[in-house]
Length: 341
Ligand code: HEC
Ligand code: HEC
Image 1 (cartoon, rainbow, N blue to C red):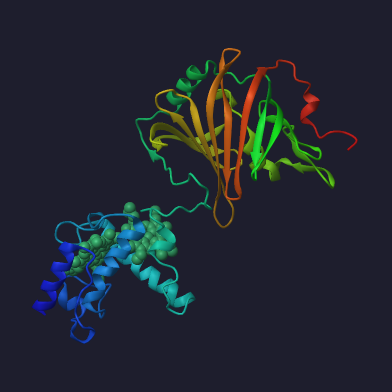
Image 2: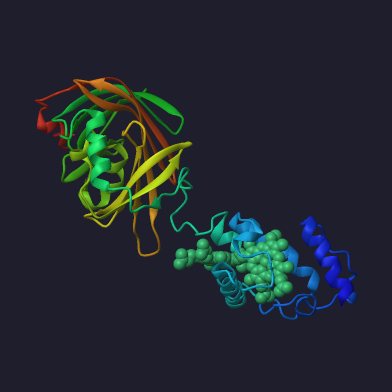
């Protein structure tokens, strides 16, 4: 017994070394270690590889669960880990014939708290709540940074759109959350829009018109924000911090009217909006969408993001505007489904 323990200590200090005991000679885990409950009856040599697996799955060091005395149960995380071990075993026994199919790695995937959103590049950036970040102050700073709190009356923009590897010229009109887009493709112009009530797009089979409750995601995919008043109204608002592309950001989180969870990231130095994350709930889990805003340029005295990168689980689109002008009197019918088509 002492021999086994001594060897384990050697392997502990080296961390990662295999335990060179022939299978038959190995003591059980509870004999070799002081405080074993989850791994009772397992061979002593299986304990450290399991520890390494847990650490790797959560991307943490041993000290995430342990104090300097490994047998101590002082840390909550160690207790949680025991419950998780029991859960993992139960799930696999009940559903997968006892094979290690669902593991710490499946759920945690390198995070201490699993992400319960469908995968989207960029979601690994996570906001931490902070009482000292006041949403109203962050929004006021945003208004000051762009040059106005007011939503701009209307915008007329030209640029390019890149989707599925194809870049096409783009012309866009905006007014509040309404928009109309024309992208010129080799064959025919593709048009799409949203008039506040219905979304629509042209397709080879003709015009498609879709009621608002089914188009929220595609509307949000296109929306440009021009100041605090143009942002969606949210409730249960809270503040936070995050690191976005290595830069400190201030975060405002809340819930939109249709229950979508919204997270707004503002650059701490410039005050400008750099990312908006939407989490759309479903009865099984939430789908995420990210809009990154950059390349701010001054247009009629107001800073406007000329670049919008939209990420979803199905791919990214990039809209890059080359020219923009504020248009006070956009013909409101441009946002409606085109007639006679
Ligand atoms: C996610 C939490 C977690 C991490 C990370 C973790 N451990 Fe553990 N460790 C546990 C749990 C839980 C037990 C108790 C297992 C049991 O009850 O059978 C344990 C038990 C041990 C024991 C037995 C102590 C004794 O005498 O009872 C050792 C040694 C140990 N861990 C070493 C490590 C090392 C080394 C690492 C880093 C490579 C590590 N652990 C990482 C959760 C963790
Ligand atoms: C079926 C999915 C699933 C599996 C498998 C799973 N976990 Fe978890 N784990 C979760 C979820 C979800 C949470 C967060 C619960 C919460 O936030 O209330 C969590 C939380 C934890 C925590 C608490 C984190 C903290 O900071 O307090 C630890 C520690 C942990 N898991 C360790 C493990 C280990 C070790 C394994 C493998 C033995 C494991 N988990 C397997 C889903 C899982």
